[in-house]
Length: 260
Image (tube, rainbow, N blue to C red; front, side):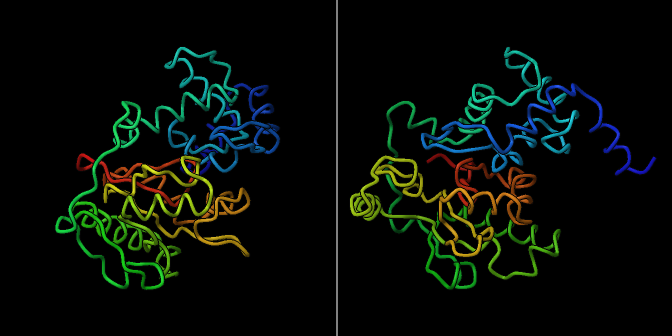
């Protein structure tokens, strides 16, 4: 049996009732997984599938079966239904892979690196030629990852903007001033203690919906991004290079090869 046919057969096997529930909630679940009201969980489906180690569509019985198996490992009701509590547990697993989040949970805001410890990206690596700085190890890992993505996926290579960096290291003073200016300090978008102060976090261009910017947190924009080749490749492959995501922002990735 061809691999694609085998996958299709596997995706058709599992709890059909749970699959129907997931198909409905995929576009209708009313919740606030990151403190802001949202409808549906399709934006997060690629990350969820990656965590469940399944290539099955989120509305399929195979996806429900994979979710049920994961729920059992977490001592949750293993019904195969993606609920807010199930997602919150999964989100917690993903978030705690970010060293910055683990420090924040301890009440620690890491000091920024000295200027001399930062490396400059090339003009071509910055989105629209933007000047970008990162710690040398993070920049080297980014370069390996971006090169692999372009070599492995022609759709990514076709757009030179893909995986360019539009934000790397950010001065804590500048970040704090911006969050005051925008009136969103310590919200889900801006924080006075941002992971960008570490020089290990970067915002990568993964696409943008028409009428939105590459870092717009509007739900239609994030959903659009979740379907792009660049984002899908990162979800599947970024961990090969030591990068972990912030689930709310498809563009935000952090390198774990060095302590913050």
